Amino acid sequence: MARIVGSIMSTHVPSIAGAMSRHAEGEPYWKPFFDGYEPVRAWLDEVRPDVAVVVHNDHGLNFFLDKMPTFAVGCAPQYLHADEGWGIPEVEPFPGDPQLSWHLVESLIGEEFDLTTCQEMLVDHAVTNPMQLCWPDPDDRAAIRIVPVTVNTVMFPYPSARRCYALGEAIGRAITSYDAEEDLKVVLMGTGGLSHQLEGRRAGFINKEFDLRFLESLTEEPAWATQYSGEDLVRLTGSQGVELLMWLTARAALLGGARKVTSNYHIPISNTAAGTVVLEPAA
Ligand code: DHB
Ligand code: FE
Image (cartoon, rainbow, N blue to C red; front, side):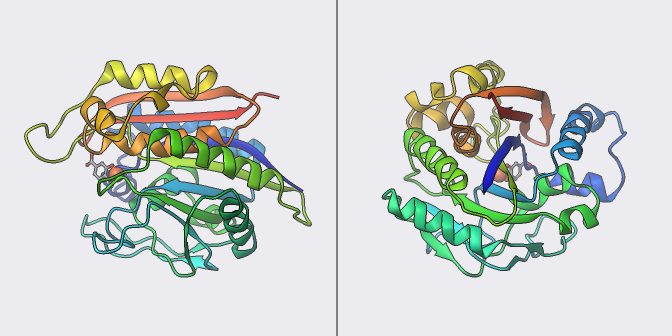
């Protein structure tokens, strides 16, 4: 039997890892951001998940513009990080859970999601940063298996918000139908966002009003953002703000409704409106 214990949504700005390696969490710039993870860690200490299904967008470390799957699932026994050019420390490999990965793949392809399956997969800051934020101790990270799921938000056309929501619901069904020997506790993670744009004339663009509306929608009105197209989301949240599609996917997996455990919103971390949310199943 497997059950979803909750969904963690988290920004994944690379400089967070730099701050952690310099032990700068208490500095005035960083404190309001890192303080948002204390309740996340306390919650994780209580629920103690075995596996994290990490919905993220690869930024060019694993997939490049020559080959860009819309959705991909990692099926590897472990996932390596590598130098991404951000000057952040490389993180140790993350253990995988190939059996759960293949169950997800079979279930999702059975529901007509045409996925790419990856028996080797590098993971970038979109996985490593939220993992480090949630489990700062490398020994704790080594005890959590991961199943990485990627959603393309780096090269047009993106999957629609509606499709990402449907993917999240299908992930929810796949996990709850998994016949594990142990009582497997699975946490969903959705990484990226909130509003930000790193390049071009609108570099530095942040839309606090939209972010707060989106944050509010996650608990009671989770499909709210599915009204927007990829182009709408770029206009409203910036060219990288579309990473909120990962949040939407992770939220949609909580099929029976959600209850908010904690949330934090802080502007800016680097060029990004930084958001952190934990949701639990309502029932
Ligand atoms: C930043 C944000 C991101 O989501 C990312 O992938 C890289 C950099 C930033 O704000 O610096
Ligand atoms: Fe990003």
